[in-house]
Image (tube, rainbow, N blue to C red; front, side, top):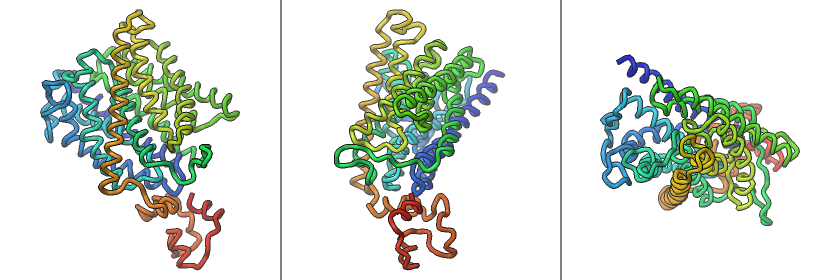
Length: 434
């Protein structure tokens, strides 16, 4: 009886850490986008925590963890997820809360990739669709004992495939359909850099995400007395550190500068990549996995730019590419079944299959959500809304009151010009709203 109390406290704390990661997503995205869109990305995180949470509780949990005779989709627990029989000393409510945090995190991956040009209503619709159907369906295949990939022996301890690869490739598809921000790419294919609004803010978000990831990974033990809890946490730390170090060093060599955004994304890539195997690999393997992830994120970011897909925060490179890599890495480094540790290829084959299936499903799911939004509420903002900034267009308030010197005058730039008769020059306009 004492174990169930201990587990309850641990998993509720771990769930709170995972949910606190939404604060990290908010700060990270607000710091990496332009100032005129900082409020909008924060409001999208509130959508994740409200609409996303309720949609998952009502429908998504049943799709993911409900009973299933065919290995494809859960058909029970809708609107009553606490009826799940876990078979372990842990209250079902704690498990539901923990899984809710994972579902919400998956939406937030998409949020960054579509920032600065997506219709807010379309994002609300996306949050509902992904937490009700898209995310839980592929999650069912891997994390439900009835799922077809689970029956094949696929290993994904805390979600490199289930959460990150799925969310990352859904984000890729949606960003492709949505199109780039105005002025992001030139006619010759070269990319223009849109400077982040606040790197210290983005860094704070990364630190919060890093902290929350210990709940993300170690909480997935679902057992406060598990012997793997501490090794999981240590592997998480080692992979994050090596991912950040690799990205830092490569950026210094490739760009001649110690790039802060690349270092941030290197840390996050190490975390994404180790999430699948944190309970299955050694510490040295965790270091290698993290370092490779830190290298992948730099070249994947360049690749995304080269194919003219606009991803303001690097979500596709961090979560999509490294979610796939981390899933496959389990088949290479798993201490009991890995190719490099035992010479066996059976687990590797399953991991490659699972990673490919989830990536393709993410792409299809992203295309579906984008097309549904396009045909219903509209997917993209108008040119005027994009130029003005989504903070004023959708929320009526700027992140920073940059026009406060004009007492009692409108903060909407267009209304400001009309009211005062002052024409804002292009250079000043950029200074005021970017």
